[in-house]
Structures are given as structure tokens and as C-alpha cells.
Length: 260
Image 1 (cartoon, rainbow, N blue to C red):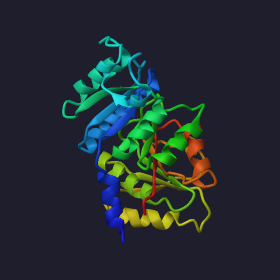
Image 2: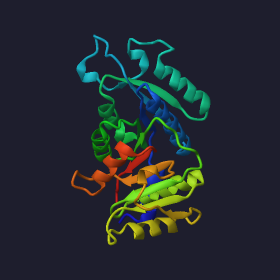
Image 3: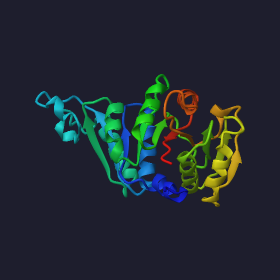
């Protein structure tokens, strides 16, 4: 039987690279920055995916992830190449690779998810459902990053309408690595099991300070990262919580699947 310790190790040390989808704009650059930080923290590599025009000789059966040399845009000043070059400069100990794909970024990220520690993508506030669906199918944590970056001393916000599952362990591990407290916000009924799960996760991380965050003003909470349980389906209580945060919250959001 899987124990809480086993699940904690799986959440904190899932093998594989961090995989980020890049699109031009502030959110895309912020997503790459956070992805590089996560790759360094997990002592793994970072793979950056960017959409590319497929060469005319390429079969539609081979529309997987390809190195940039397979595509016709080899301009070193192209935004994705510039962004990756900056990441390599800022994170010399992290192996950062750039890969082109002829698929849409959500589809390409989903196909890469089985080998990933986590997926990272820029925030699209107009289509939160697409990110929620990606999170629901990925099987690994999915981080959605807005254009603004939070202060490094900002706390980690753990939000749940019921028992948070592995999201609680993920939040504690993130807070421990950052040296910040966890803000625990229970938006469910008193019998949801959220509080008990937070206590159990906190027992495994005694150095992490736990503070309570009220439901009011959730979107203005001083958070560097919000962590929620990935909804299993649309009727799941976590679905409206996740989509609401993706639409309105100004901080990065991590949707973490529960493997318990």
C-alpha cells in the first residue's frame, strides 16, 4: 500500500525534465523563468517547446517534438532562441534545450507529460478551461504563470474545497525549498477534510510555518504560488476553484494530481 511518505517522495522527486511551453509575451517569459527555477530545484533539465512551421517534406505521422534544426526558422535572434539563451546564462547548471513542434502547445505538452516532472505554461486568462483540461489529463503537476512575477519571499498558498491530496505535500515542499510559510485556505465545508490533511502534511515538514488565509480576498492574497488539487472531472469541487483562480488570480498556480 502506498504510504504518505511514498507519495511525498513521488511528488517531490518525480523523474524527468521540467517541460515548458513558450509563446511570445510577458506570460511566456515569466513561465520560462519559473520553469528554470523548478528545474534547478529538482536537479533536472528543462525542455522548452515552441510551435514551428512543419517543413513541406515532413510527414504528418512524424509531428512529434523535434530539435529546432528540423524547422525552417534558424534565426538566432528569434524570440524563443533569445529567451533560451538567457536561461542558459542565468542557470548555467541546468541543461536547457529548445524543441519545435508542429502541434498546438497544449497538445504537445500533453504528449510529453508522461516523462515530465511538471509542465509549465503561460497564463491565458481568457481560456482557463483549456489549462484545467490539460491539468486534468497530464498526470503530473501543471503550473500556469501570469505575466507578473512574485517576490521570492512571498508565501505559498494552499487552497482547497476538500481534502487536497498530494497538493498539500507539494505546497509544503515548495515552501520548504523557498524558505517561506504556507497560507492554508479552506473554501469548502467544515467537514471537507482539508484542515486534517494540512496538519498531516505539516507534520512531515516541521520547519514550514503554517498560517491561515481567509476566503475573502483570495485573489489578492500575497502569494508567490498557489497550489490546488487537480480536478478529476468538471463536477469535481476543485474544477470551479481552479478555473476561477486561473481567470482572476495574479500569481502562478500549480494544479497537482492526487495519486493516493
